[in-house]
Image (cartoon, rainbow, N blue to C red):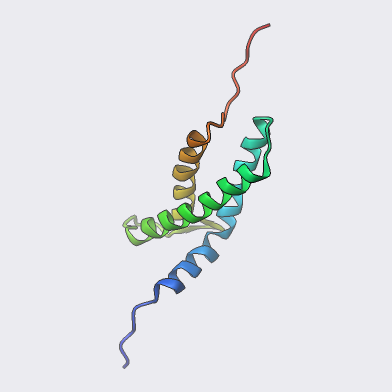
Length: 109
């Protein structure tokens, strides 16, 4: 019986991108909706936030996946849970960093 070799990092990154693709598209759609709600949609800001979300979200997702100790599976249907957790954390950081408002306060006239 042959000994199993460790999986290369590039294959783990590709697998993480594949498993988290639906979750990542969901996160990008939420970011687009938040930018549209602020009334100032700018393609450069949207692309910058999207690229930062994808890169930092995938790195954090790999870290969460490496330290996964819960008794449940990492996939919940089509949703990759480490990617979901990382998108929520990184998304809120990016929203605060770019000063986007999630909820608009109603002012009385």
